[in-house]
Figure 1 (tube, rainbow, N blue to C red):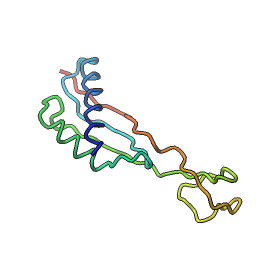
Figure 2 (cartoon, rainbow, N blue to C red; figure 1 turned 90 degrees about the vertical axis):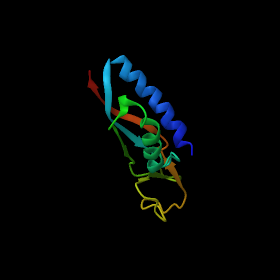
Figure 3 (cartoon, helix red, strand yellow; figure 1 turned 45 degrees about the horizontal axis):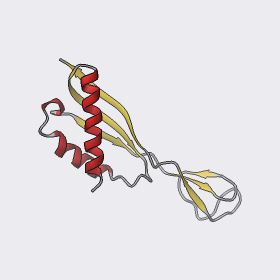
Figure 4 (tube, helix red, strand yellow; figure 1 turned 30 degrees about the vertical axis):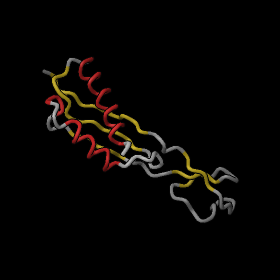
Length: 114
């Protein structure tokens, strides 16, 4: 479960933000999980709850995840589709490449002051 190591790195980054801003605690974190990233959002949630449980600066905080739809590009003409079609509506091609969606992006952090 590589989500555990991802959340451990996220918590290090969040700790640095908490310290940098002199905040007392974190209340909310929002991540975008790319549909082709290989990251399971449910496993991220589980790992976050497990690693944040013993830290009072994370008490009652929540991790929100958003997974945008995947994008596919026709290899022949470059037409972009949200869902992988059987054939390209523009040229009839049948080979598609995944476009983007491999990211894990920290979108927003909400901190509370002391």
